[in-house]
Length: 499
Image (cartoon, rainbow, N blue to C red):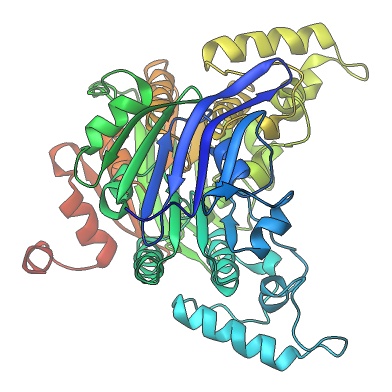
């Protein structure tokens, strides 16, 4: 094997009295994809930040081409070819795509050469098969396009080492395949690649080597083909995950929510469905099919028309507070930008939308703390300190907190958009059982997901969206991957089997 380009030797890292990495050895070799996997909070992000120069180890060494790494910052590491695609977007929302890609490296000196930068940006976007304009402003782009811009920015830096933190979490399947082709191209060029993902099928497909991290320590290393997806999951969590999904529910109550000829112009048209007490209705479809827009219309976040009734009473919902008063709640797909205030504490986030319950005008802190106690217990939220900023929690614990916040008003109907995006398999299973518990307690749940196993494993019925319309509803034995794909694509089952 060739000498490692970038390596950690016996690296330990502490934050205050808490040690989060315990003597980690890790190496990245030219022309190799090395996957780093583990549960949220296992230490993956800390390793990537140390490799990229953003954090210094407490002890141990970072090696660059066999010698101690010469950099003292992320910018110095990047100048030598170590490029990180962060899970949290590092983009300036008010600048264009082109301006973001060349920010700090502008062409043309004092008189900026906007034309050349725009042309170079267009070449990168074409390479990624991304149809975004170089002149589009970042704030106007959907999350998946922002991720493609981050990837384009990384490609522009001609990396020798490319570190990717959950790059596929928000991409469509088509975009994921484009990403894989770029990874193969970079591997062939001798770039050393670190890839993290909670999608274990991606790891199995891409990785030449796999390192499994648990509780800040390396517990397994393996070559291509040596670990099945089940073996990876077991190594990550330290236990068997045969029962990742809860058992099926068999009894449901009367109709709680009825939606008739519902539209969210111009994206969603003519949707009708009913939801029973104790039922989980899955909504499947391609990104852009109108799933999220439908949900946001149902809770008053988007202008809409059509009829919504709850327990036989017609509702007028013009805002999220209207929805809350009528027993509807919505958990957004974007927890970092629209769900949580990352600089605030657990307590402040949990009670933000229900402050009137804790006193007016003075807030009863003791009541808030008691609510947080219950949330921590009920949703197994794991935080070193109650007063820490939510942005410092792992993704899984952020999602648990957001679920607790959504459930605090005690809704009768809850819509959960992408419940486990960017979450490890162990925490996914926890959230599946949380959702099942809500249904068994008599709530009615709508789950929107791009994860096919999630839809198949959770749903009592599945409604499929296609091009802003309801393509069909499947129930019981009708629910299968083939049937869902047939409705998603608007084709026949025979055509799928022949493809």
